[in-house]
Image (cartoon, rainbow, N blue to C red):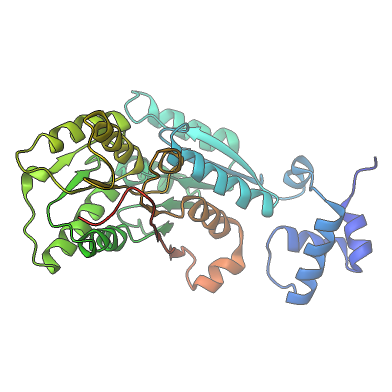
Length: 338
């Protein structure tokens, strides 16, 4: 089977190889109808650019780096998937670089990766995107960088995020609408900026409804199902236990659900449980967990677009584009009337 070349695509589309190259690389100065035609022919012929040849003929490597602290977590899996899809659509390749900020030589490792891989850009996932020392390394390197769900935006970085505060507020309003007034809240780790925003949303909804938050019902976890189980024990042992528990992520919600089942507390008849993220664990549980769908894969794909597509940045109106993607409440069987 012969390998399809850029000349084959150009001949079928009736354009020059240079025009095909511009379309593939997301460059400007290509008419929309020509861009659409070339993309159609690329798909029909299943054309795959030779990354090595492309890098030799230009100053780019066509490699993007995804820097993340825990590559095997559920959150990281969705981010990697979105980044891979985005890279494939733009004929780029993705390199995943784990970053352990507790390692004494983490800084030299990151600098070495940036230098050795000759990356065209970097995507930095939470919570390490909030580490000032790490962000300083990227700033000094001059490498184009996009942060996923950061607490703030460094001046030289693009950002993609969702409104954690508003999403948590809407979930709490949903529980209040079911008649719940004594609601437990499982916080996320202090190191993760989204934890504070989700708690703020919870408290804002409770205050707006005129419901006093019992601080005994607020407990802090680390986003693991293990702490969800431990903190579920604490909340369900209160003299007046909550009628609903809102966990800051789905793994902790799963832990709460397991603890409730252990004590014979039926869900949702005697206890409503909800989470955040729409992780696979929320769908694997029984009953399936009500949650907030966070567009993790979409955020990573958008980060790729910001890095490699000049038209995308122009449309966003900012060389360092800052995007806010929508969330969604996913209502399942783990929540019901108080």
